[in-house]
Amino acid sequence: MKDLLDEYKITRSDLKKALITANEEDAFHFKRMISDLTYAIDWMRLGYNPGNTRGIERRAAYEREVAVDPLHIQSYVSNTTTGHTGTSEDDKQRIQEALEVLTDRERDAYLMVRGEALPREEVARLLNVSKGTVNNMITRCEQKIISHRIAPAN
Image (cartoon, rainbow, N blue to C red; front, side):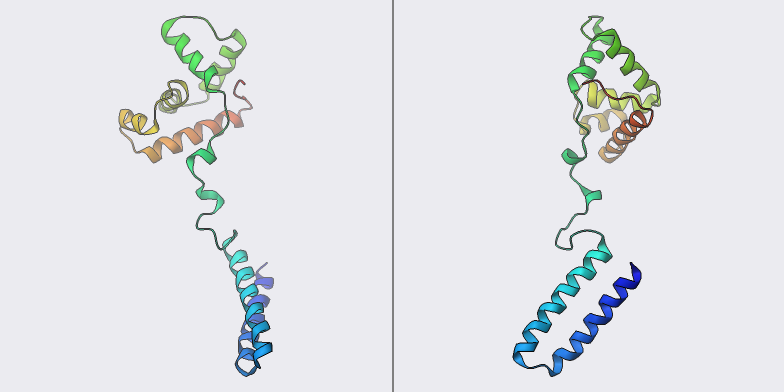
């Protein structure tokens, strides 16, 4: 890829030199080729569309969220605090296994965000951490759950 990038840069440089002595019609085509090469070079260098201000790694929170039916985890949390039944034993077992792979602090954050549906700002305040830390903890929790092959109940 580096070789290709270097070749594109050399070609662009050659076109810029030729543009100096080109007639009006050729200059028009040279400028378009230079523009196209610049776009391709920027794309290869950045790894994403150069016109975008954000790469895939900077998606908004709603785009990072894993689609999970929140009613199952909320029902589980409600059942553990009130003693009411409503979640099947299968679902309870799967949720308990998923929560066992998390540390106590991760479990608290995950249950507050997913189980009690508290805003992340509120969870951050309760845990005395930043909202970014809560976001990282939730992402880490979901990665741990997925890596242990424990799929959330649907």
